[in-house]
Amino acid sequence: MSDQVRIVEVGPRDGLQNEKAQVTVDARVAFIEALLAAGLHTVEVGAFVSPKAIPQMVGSDEVLRRVSRHAGGEFHVLVPNEKGYEAARAAGAKVIAVFGSASEGFSRANINCSVAESIERFKPVIARARADGLKVRGYVSCVLGCPYDGEVKPKAVVDVARVLWDLGCYEVSLGDTIGVGTPTKARELLRAVTGHVPMANLSMHFHDTYGQALSNLYAGMEEGCRVIDSAAGGLGGCPYAPGATGNVATEDVVYMLDGMGVATGVDMTKLLRATNEISKLIGRPPVSRVAAALNAKQRANR
Ligand code: HMG
Ligand code: MG
Image (cartoon, rainbow, N blue to C red; front, side, top):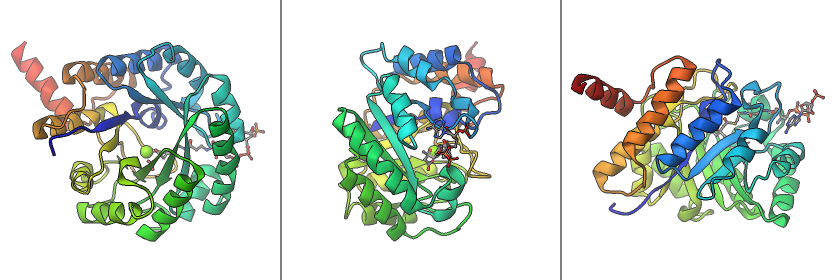
């Protein structure tokens, strides 16, 4: 597998949306700039969602405006509806992400509507974004299990992924929101979805609740998937996915890929610095095994 993987760094959004500590706009901008400096060019920086639902993402307009001056970066923001689209566009968004679910229970809890209703909400958002020259990414959550409905069949994922692709999303990110998947299931899922969305346009967004994310990513890579969503330090979670922990840690992904000879363009030392800084701010050490190992090694060498 000696080729390339594109990493979509979701720490500043998925990572911080579930933190108790309110991280200031200044600190979020500094975090994103540190990630860019580490070589992570595609960064999800915020969300234009209800401030009552996710107060942590308040100020995403300012964050987006400030980081947008970095010409080399591609900045993504979540948009659930036309109100969010208008705010994102006013803040200069060039890439937005709509987010749906393969399961009804999570759709209701997360965005207060059924899966079918969510698609109807996305249609005008995607159409307007494309007419305005923006790129649209599509998420499907709960692809390997739902905290409310339990098992999720690949067919339910295929149905939503196909619609998002047909509506014009350039990439569909498959979210194991609660991190329950195992490699065989991840593989079966990718095989099912790639019958309808090309593998080159799929991303793996795996949370690491049960410690399976790296194995699942490896299985997905064996199927040919080359885009991975991850969060520095293994930050992340969703307030509407009770019990779920963070995304797979970017450090863990980069370490695995480096070892496999797969290029990511990420500088581990700089990434570790970014992770350590945000961990200090939120008041707990990174859950990433690689960050813990490298920090311990640095302490021993001091
Ligand atoms: P709703 O209550 O059905 O919406 O919420 P509504 O249209 O009836 O509006 C209710 C209130 O929200 C109104 O304000 C609106 O103005 C306001 P009020 O009159 O009560 O003061 N509102 C908004 N405010 C700001 N921006 C907006 C917006 N829309 C309405 N865009 C809604 C529907 C989707 C808005 C709400 O449920 C919501 O914001 N949910 C947040 C969902 C969220 O951000 N979840 C976390 C991200 S998803 C995730 O983490 C999974 C992912 O990582 C992939 C994976 O891991 O699987 C992507
Ligand atoms: Mg997520």
